[in-house]
Image 1: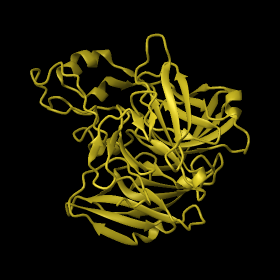
Image 2: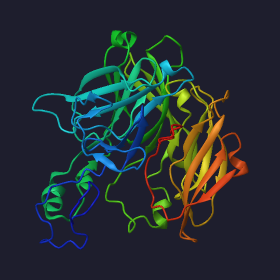
Image 3: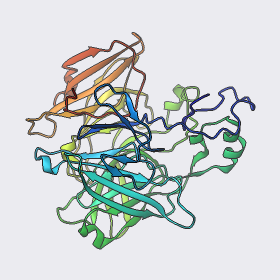
Image 4: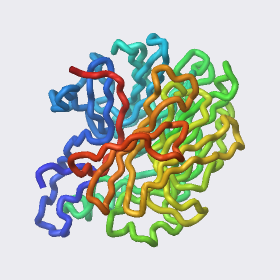
Length: 413
């Protein structure tokens, strides 16, 4: 195997003489993408971004040390970021982060948040020390008016698996990071403004669960940085050895469910509570970027066809959740089911330039139709998900399942 990623096994057959002691991991830069101020980057949290030509999509520079002219504090940048969209160009921001995967001896993990304005000029940079964050698997971030937020997962290195399996190419690198039952996750509240700095950086325990993707966060009372609500899509547990052989129909009976969940945080008291907003298993949540860090109602996500407290399934439905921005609310749902052998990728929300309402826009989603061995790009009116797509384009080639995308209204010539 020439290029081994973090989720690749050196030798699927388990032969001890196939790539043993080969610890090189390819920077695949295949998890996220962002097009900002005329520059296009492919992202992967395990390494530095790759820079691409926005017209041809060819890679022009691998593992760059600077993004939009700003040097990275940490030699890697996460695949996820937040965009604050607005009609006023001066208020638009791209907000990204870096965090050390392994800290220096007796030092906290170095972390940095970066903010760029619409022209690509760096508007802000904040650095933090995040204690005991090694192997915390920081995949996504959240932002409010006063805070940057990171969720540290209850994970740790499995030294036995590292020495007996990974060294002999019998498991993937990701599999040596083990989920710790009974251990709390940690919410890191990192000050963005002076109001938050007066409260101080906090590390707040959260129930045992695994976080990949977050929905949004907001402060319930304007001007009060001490209370925050954030919504996420936590997994009940995580096992990185899951694969096509282990994910049988029995897996969808209980198993590692992912539910749209609301968390109420008292930053000063360093406490949190949570409640599920819907019992439909979902993933890949998206919101209108004009509502990033603010009170919002609508989320677009990939969801299971079955809605049940125990039974679930793969992502076969586009789901629009409508939830009041208050603790104790429950989500209403609008659903479009694509078909028995159809499996959807991440939905992307495209805001109408003249839009007034939060759901004035379109939702774009690629669906893999296994029955036809084709991929279709469907476009929905975000206000009327249940009416089905308003346009469909069948792609020339079958598009393999992917991860994250980005809607840009810029035409590169």
